Length: 69
Image (cartoon, rainbow, N blue to C red; front, side, top):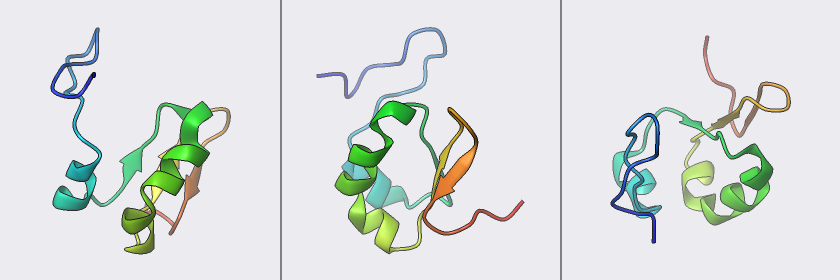
């Protein structure tokens, strides 16, 4: 329902989950830390391909491979 719209306050586009596999970014920033487990399970193909997720809350950590600094 939110796909194709923009996040309020910052105008970031809300994209389809398939976009992650199409674009294959170096890392994903998960601001929805409370849904991190569910999102990682849904994005198993991205994670299995080596794509990490950075979760900044409640403490900064990565899920998946380490992100170079």
